[in-house]
Length: 319
Ligand code: HEM
Image (tube, rainbow, N blue to C red):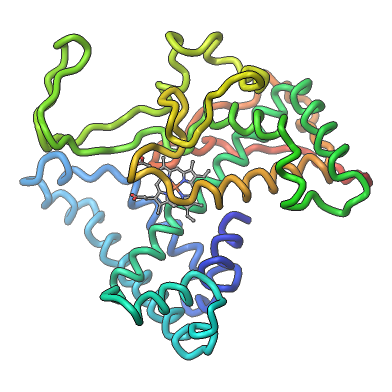
């Protein structure tokens, strides 16, 4: 679903629009995302780049680049032929093509922006929805409360709509709680511009060093959070803490000028998805599995997914 929403916004069609020939866009994207999270020995020991020729990483990077180039060239070409590019409407490619006419934006830069949007925008929202549903199934009282709220607000409608979201204050706390325990991008990199010392002189970090901020550890820090491992959306009821980059104890979207530009887009997608899942369905675990037995292991990679798929039984309800 996340992929279709981003595809519609970027290409005007779900599933990558004009993909179709050979690999699907989803397959191409999947391989790209695997490569982004792949351990690359040359990042740490530049002299050992030859290892990537032996272990196949160089070949996969070249193939992935060729697939992506081919795909983006095709869809950009299709958009160039359309009239929407001049009409002031259209999707992200139409907008970028308009920008290109008035600026120095090259085709390569345009492709890189599109890739950024896909790599950064789909897996992250998916992981958030899965982790939120996982916490809800493990915490039935929270699930019931969130479900009551959603069903009251959207009563009589076929679906929860975007205009209902501002009224779903408990649902927002639930999603915040999920971001706190399961930030989809747990480690955010930066490069130091000047030498610095932290923790009372304990650590000296030279300039031009790659450092990682462990957002997952920060949002579960016992020095800041009471019962840090507990999923309790109520903790946000009276709290000022938000995830927009001002409160360092909760930074699922990073912070500063490299902070996530997709924050508003993704919050809408996630809230709408979870709200409708709760509105239209009742959920339970498969027979014989208790809430305590739900596997909470995380997968390795740039986005922190649930390691094993979440398997739930849905039953449709008429509200
Ligand atoms: C729940 C969903 C999402 C989460 C948790 C998330 C999280 C993040 C994080 C932690 C970063 C790094 C921020 C930093 O370095 O300070 C980031 C960067 C980025 N995100 Fe998101 N993101 C989400 C959805 C999206 C969506 C939907 C889009 C686009 C449609 C998007 C586009 C980007 C881009 C382009 C960057 C790179 C920004 C840059 O380096 O300047 N993200 N995101």
